[in-house]
Length: 223
Length: 148
Image 1 (cartoon, each protein chain N blue to C red):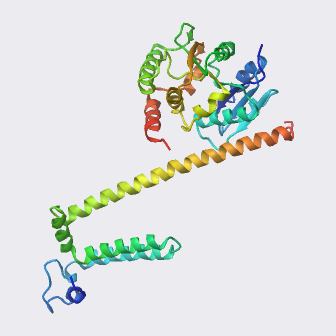
Image 2 (image 1 turned 120 degrees about the horizontal axis):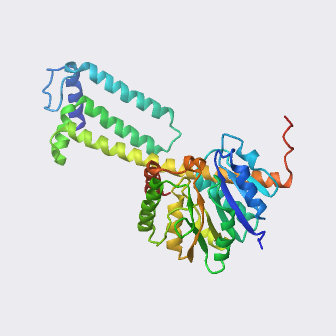
Image 3 (image 1 turned 120 degrees about the vertical axis):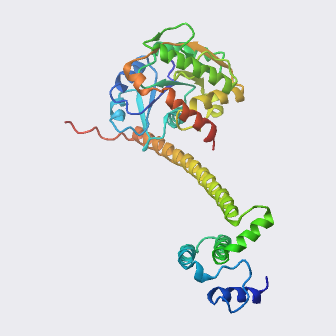
């Protein structure tokens, strides 16, 4: 049974080609959806606007971290009890959401993991190695012991939201989240999820070079 | 240095030979072009600061003290050597380079901090606006887009 108080937050930037399919799938499973259009230059907002979806639109592009936080703020305003973050590029499976939410019965936050048994569909060997390296580095930085560094699919209780407030506007928000999980002492669990690497999601995703920028943001842009 | 000594020094720049110039002073006639350029630049900065005199008096005074020091260094290049020796630096040019580097770093960090703060405020405003508009649209939905 899907709760109407479990909000799915989707941050989208220039995803007009895929957003309707992704949003439609989530809405079909009964979750209220909040799409944050992060100042897209295409018609992402219009494409996302179907029944059951609220579109919140940034007037300018701020970055994924800022967009997620806007969606989380809005979900809290609407009385969310659980919040799920979900990528707009279609790499996640909506079937994984109930498992993440179920884990919140005993934990404050559930992180999707690509490396706990379920399939990674379509990932190159190079990408797997990159993800492994990112996970090792991320664990060293955050002090957590996780099997996957940054999977966009997560669920957390509304009560945990204040402790997890993201101030990193761009991609370093994922590392920031882990640090905040660690320092706040929230109960965290990993849940296996399926990630589908399509040509579209890989093109939109992060490569090794972007990692340098992310690390710069993480270490030097703390306000 | 007394006031009368300073006046004599100043006079000696424009009329070399009329009095006994201290070792620090290089006669103006020896390097006229670069000095005119530098002093004009300093005067221009002073004028711009004077135009923006709605700032705190403390800022204005600080800037004019710095400009006066710079002008003194232009008029008495040798004096920078004396100051450099006093603080333990070999040459006046080196001392000025060090001060300049430190000042540039300070300004850089100052503005970077401001920039980050400004960006944070921009995020807050954009977020507030986005949520506000979503709430307004929820209460009174916008008319559907015209059919193609």
